[in-house]
Length: 248
Image 1 (cartoon, rainbow, N blue to C red):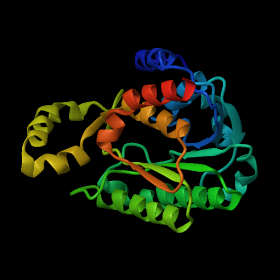
Image 2 (tube, helix red, strand yellow):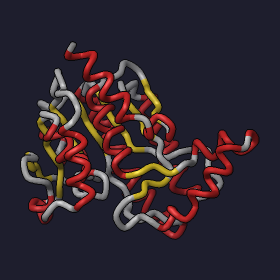
Image 3 (cartoon, one colour):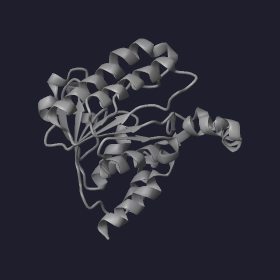
Image 4 (tube, rainbow, N blue to C red):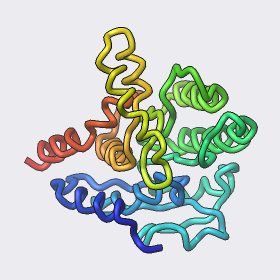
């Protein structure tokens, strides 16, 4: 699949960053999705080795340069033996275009795939588990949010060294309608009594999310780290500073 203009622009920005001093071995689920398809080329450009889990019918859908392995994200026994030698596990599986009407799918796909990934990572002693959650508390999308809150609790229970990212809505190709809300967000973020909620449930771009995920990969954590919307928005700046410090 040819790269989109947004992907090319993102890769150009990635190329401008100082090189990563400590490349990681990354195992990723959900690599063919909205975020994963942009994240994998960025990780490869940074020098990381990436292995992506896909169904046997989707082997051709991962970006070039990514090692492809077959398995079922809903059953860790189908892929657990393929995770190593990864030291970093990124879980991005989720129902596309979430809506309140998809509550059953959130339980059947988002929850089950995360449960399987969390338990597999814990059993293998994976050094760093990265989970795509969602901003909460939130006044809507309760079933979607509830699943991710439960999965975060599982991560804590399994004592995984983990980075949990909590965006609300990711703007990008095919996901542009909330741009109309930006003026409202600016007003709400300026008012003291709505600022906290507006920042927590703020909009981020696909580029910002990819940079935040790259930053998570390149800065492993001991314990649990929560990355909320304000930190996602500034990840590129902090990533550049951290890499420069590591290579100095």
